[in-house]
Amino acid sequence: MLKIPQHKRFNQLPEHIQDQLQPLPVYQIKFVIAGGTFLLLDAFVLIPLLFPYMKAFLYVILPLLAGISIWAIWLLCKKVEDIELDSVLFSGYLGVVGAISYFLMGLKYSYIGGIQSPIYYIVMCVLFLATVYFSILQQYKKYDSIEKRPKKNTPAWQYTLVRVSVPVGYIIAQYIMGLSPTLVLVVMTIVWYGFSYLFIWILAKSFHKYFFIKENIHLVYFVNKKLGRKARGAD
Image (cartoon, rainbow, N blue to C red; front, top):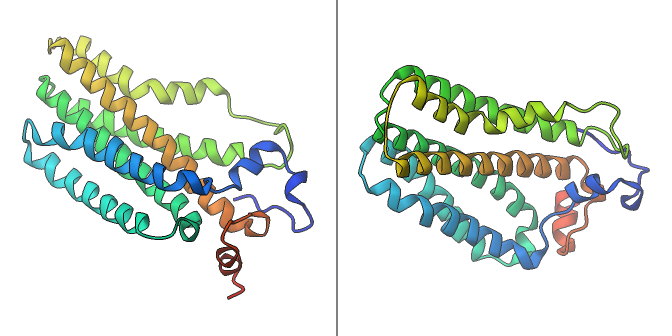
């Protein structure tokens, strides 16, 4: 994790570094927590999770949704100025829950669509983990220098390949295995995998932001001055 020298001032840093050192605006925090949890997760996942009912997926996803929802309610009950840093960490875990939940929903609909080969599910899990790894790596590389233009960047095509690998892997499986699920199942499966990647990006971005802020807390502005002092270890 990049540690910015103590003598550097915020306004001396490039724009992308400044952005990564800023928590969410206080007027957005509760909207992001509520919308991300109760709309993008609970509302979109719960009904497809229950109907059709499949015990294995229910037992994995439901506790994740319950845990993140309880945490969200707890944060929403607090003053927004007191959760500036907590909301960044929450977003990271929201990304974890969303990525896993939507990915498992993709596997569920793959199974409903008729794919039963263990090889397919092993390959998809490997692609999912690779996507998580490269997304996190991308965040570290993006913020590994305070130079305006880093000297060396990982070729963009590598990340593009990872981003499309999961849905494309599913489409290829349809042809290789000679399966013929309905078009609705195919579309829904690709949608689940697409949402999974969105949440992978959220987890990678949010966790890096949280630890980046913690590492360079002297450059971070909090609306709640007490929170800033506490984060710096002054209390």
